[in-house]
Image (cartoon, rainbow, N blue to C red; front, side, top):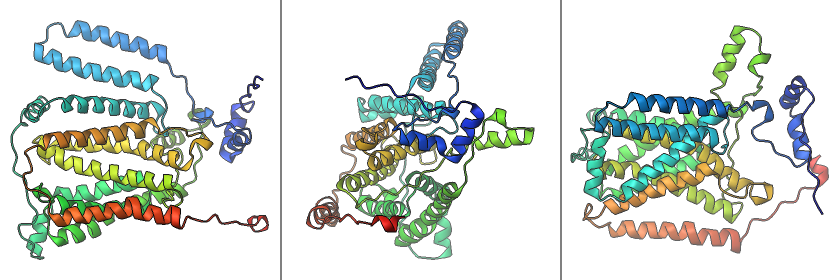
Length: 425
């Protein structure tokens, strides 16, 4: 038997439609009929794909005529840059939509395109040896390709004003800004604090490989955790709470009268369309538990890759390439975390049958970076890990991955709480 096709629920006029969207009636109608329109139809615009195709072909024609007399090196650089720009442009038009719609849907498609390009760059680096990869970095900056001294932060651990001043550098501000961004991504106090403290233990465990991880005890726990990380997490969660409590009312530009109102609406275009509070419920089911554990592992691996890549590829900490990578990772992580949350919370029964493209590519990016670090680490770290580190992390892995899940989900599984209908009313 052929299932009858459902009719699209649309109000008769745009005015009534905007009114229903603001009051939530349209979403209630869709849920009642089992429909989910995303993005909301009142946000849809004409894609202008044919116009974009004409502009792209015109630009390519101009570029072909304009670059006839360039040198070989310049032509290669321009050609690679143009190919990347063309790929991002096509992705803005043809890639699937992500979980976000502000500042615009094509913007997040471009982010997805950049994630694909970054993955291709990592695969290319993976097939080079360590010396070739270091020489390849010279194409980004001629000042690269030289071995760098690794700074240690544990030379003088006396807690005094002089030692505190010596530790104050631009990376203190980077700590605050970084954890502000992570809290915006994860949107959970406990998750942020667990990742923050765990990363300090990772630094303790790996300081025999990187001198940059060697820090004084007060640098680890006071300056990093209790000052910088706390400030970033606090400000980030305050921002999340603001967006969570904010009343959202979106009206099109044509419905707004006056230049001041249109200007205010234009600024609001760069704020979230809505805000979802993340409640990970990590102990509610094995899927949520191992999903959150995997999320924390990827987050920690992304942090560690930053230090290992710059050490192995001889990129100075203050070089713009590090800033570009962190900025890209932030943009990749925003929709990726939302994809992971939707996959864990909704599941296949509610329409989410697979992990979103942003999350899939983000995991692929981070793991490929880790494989590159593993390959290039050969003969770089002759000092073996201390036995205490091996035993400690073995115990942590056994507790987190085996003992606690067995106790929580098999020996003493969570019991469903029955609430009578009278109390629900």
